[in-house]
Image: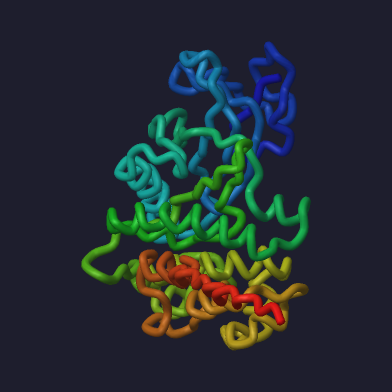
Length: 318
């Protein structure tokens, strides 16, 4: 099969050898940049389509190809979309190689569209995992936190805020590893605060912190809030967007009542401080969260005390 890369094509899959798409009539491009073959659509977002591809120069190694075709109106919105797409490529380039972040392979323009090619992660995002496996427990949430917090620590140390941490953007790989994807709305931190142009809201409703939604600002603490909401979603199987629509941010104060199973006291305390509406009262850094996740130190062993046996009493014969 060959794939049509017209972003508006309703049925892009075509038999091998076709030069024009059977569905939309657009000319089929067999290879992008002479060595990326598009295999099938993977998804669609606000800024275009994503495809599974393969690099014929690397033994047909799988890759992800993002095509920029924004579904927005107006010159300002289009320019903003262009900026964010370019920004994703730049952020992936700046982050370099990390085992839990997709590697950038290429960024180019061809046939009137921009393309970003990155590492393919074989696995399911956590939203699909949740549907398949059901609610998570303490053990799984601790494992998630201990796996993803160092990734956030890595990007925050490079002055980058992800701004869209959620189950859809975390992939569990075939070996169980967790990978953070979609840096399309990430932003370089300037000083201690990041503000989008004209206070633009960036992030996903229900997961994004108050400061992102109302002021267009984001801090490391904003990513930590989104990670906390992600944990809640996995523990409850309730989409936070529905709670946000109904209650605003007030549901954060009684998040436990939405869980089918209670969490341990120590994990609950960590989630309490992640799920704080006021950014100043929230965890400010990954280090703080990791510190509170550590089990309390075991008490030192007490020296054993051996009681001496009483001396034998002399026998008396009458």
